[in-house]
Amino acid sequence: MTMTREKKSKVKSAAKENEKVITGVFEGGGVRGIGLIGAAVVFLEEGYRFNRVAGNSAGSIVASLIAGGYSATELRQIMMSLDYSRFADKDWKDKLPFGMVYSLFAEKGIYEGKYLREFIKEKLEKAPHPIRTFRDVKEKDGSYRLQMIAADISRAKLLVLPQDIADYGIDPDDLEVADAVRMSVSIPYFFEPVQLRHVDGTECFIVDGGIVCNFPVWIYDGDIEAGNPPVGFCLVDDGETRPIHGVVSMFAAILETMLEARDKRYIADEQLTTVQIPTLGIQTCDFHLSRERQEALYLAGRKVAVKYIDVMATGAGSRSAASRKLRLRSPESRRLHGILHRPAKKQSIRKMAIAKTGIYDSLIQKVTAEIWPGVDWHLIKCQVNQESSFNPRAVSSCGALGLLQLLPATAQELGFTKDELYSPEKNLRAGITYLYRQYYRFPEIPDPVERVKFALASYNGGRGYINAALSLARRSSGPWREWNYAKAFLVHPGCRVDGKRPDHGQIIGYVDRIWTRYMTLPVREKILIETKNTKRPSR
Image (cartoon, rainbow, N blue to C red):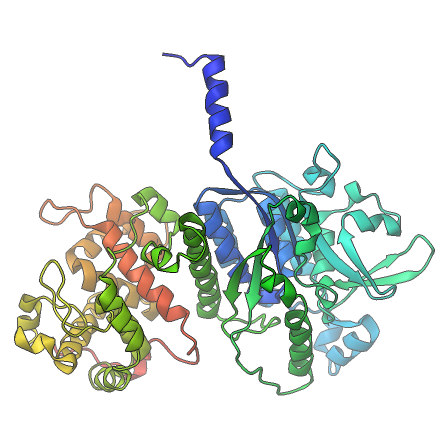
C-alpha cells in the first residue's frame, strides 16, 4: 500500500515536531577539544540535531565539522585518525639552530598552521553537506548557521566571523571557512598570526579569539532572550598545577590562565546550560598527546554529556535517577538496541560504595603486585567498582560472589572455596588470577591495551564467546585485533557457543564502563601493562 502525499506530509510534520534541535557553542582549548568531540558525539547519537553552531579555536573546528553534517561515527573516526603532532608544523628555517627564536621574532609564531588549515579544508569539502565558504552555511534570513570568533590585536578588536571580515574588504559570503578556522585557532606565539589588510590600509594581525572571549555563548543572544539558550560545551580545569619548565611552558600557562579565568560568569549563569568537560590536566598546546590520553579526553566528554542528557530527560536536579540511567553509547551500541549496561544495583549498596571507594586501595595494590606485577592496580580497582561497588558480601543473580564476583565453580578451579570468596583478600587473589590467565589466552592480540579489553570481556562473558567473535572479525577486512571493532561481532548470528548466543550488551557494557572509568581517573602517570614485569601464569 502506497502512502498518500497528505499522509507523508503528516508523518514529516510529526517527525519535525518530535525532532530534538539545539544550538551549540563550543569553547576553545587547543588539543583538549577532543573532549568537545566526545560530548558532541553523544548528542548526535541521542538524536539531537545542531541547527546552529559557533565556537572559538578548537571549538571552531568542532563546530565546522558538525555544520558539515558529519555523523557521530564519522566524527569519532576523524578524531582518532587525526595526527595532532602535525599541528606543530615548521618550515625549513625552524629546523636550523635558533630557528624557533627566529620564527617568534620574525614571523611572530613558532608553527605555521598550514597542516591544520588544509586538514579542515579537506574534511569540509568532503563532508556530507560540503562546505567551502560561508555562503554554504547562510540561512534564508541572511544569518549564518556557523560562526566563530577571532581577535584583531592590531586594532584591539574582537571579530565575529564571517560578518566582521567585511572590514578587511572581503565579502563575508566569500570567506573560506578553513581560513576562518585558521584565524580562530591562531594561539599567540604558538601559531603564526593571519595577516590581513584593513579597508583603511592598516596591516592587521589576527589571532585566537580566546584572548578576548573563549566561550562566546553571547553570539546567540536572541536565543537567550527567547528563553531557548544555547547548550554550551566548555572545558573545566580539574585543579591540577601546571608544570612550568621553560619559556614555552610558561607561555602555555599564561595563555591557559587567560582562557580559563575569563568567561566563567557564563558557566555560572542560570540562564545558560553547559556541558562541563574535565581537561584531565592536559595542556592546550600538548600536540604530542599520546593515544591513551586522547581517548581519555574523548571518554571524559562522553561521560559528562551522557549525564547531562539524562538530567535533561528526567528533570533538573534529578541526579540519582540520571545516574541509574547512565549509559555510554558507542556507535556500535545503536545497532545493539542500546544495551550497554548492567541493571542498577540497590541504592543501599551504592551509598556504601560512595563512602568506601578507597577502603581497599592498599589491599588491591598489594595483591595485584604479588599476582600480576605488570598491570596497573587502578584497573583492578575499576573492575571491583563495576563488579560489586566494593561490597565484599555482594551476590549476583547468577550466584557470583564477593568483590570481583566469581562463581564458586570458577573459584574451585583456582583453588578457592565458596566461603573464601567472601574474604576480600581471597576474592581479589582469585579474581586477579583469573583475569591474568584470560590475558594470556589471547596471544593473537599484540597490543597489551587491547588484550586487556579482550581479557575483561572474557572474564565477564566467557572466553568461548569472545573467541567466536574474534573468529568472525578475523574474516573481515577491518582491524579485528581492536576491541572497539571486534565487539560488534558479538551480535553476529554466527557468534554462538553450543548453539547459544552471548549477552552481547552485558559484555560490551562491562568492558566499556570499566575502561571509561579507568581512563578518566585523575591518576594518569601510569603504565597499564609492563610486559617486562609480567610473567606468564603457571596454568
